[in-house]
Image (cartoon, rainbow, N blue to C red; front, side, top):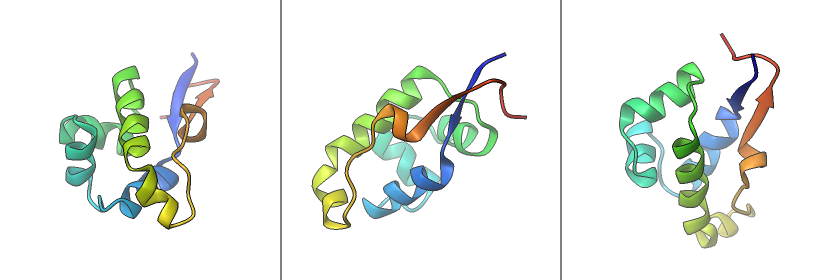
Length: 87
């Protein structure tokens, strides 16, 4: 069964660069609940809303990312389609 996998390390790095060092801060920036962000980062439960809002939040902070030599990621930069759902 195909699934979607988040590059958690890169995700957390990019959010740290814009001042969101905790999952609570990421949830506030993305506009989702802490539970949704925790499930995505820790358990691999990823939905379309999580994906879209995460990328949009990082794009809103493009200037801050540029200060550190990073560009806002695309969906393909953070998320990969896998042959099976991670367990």
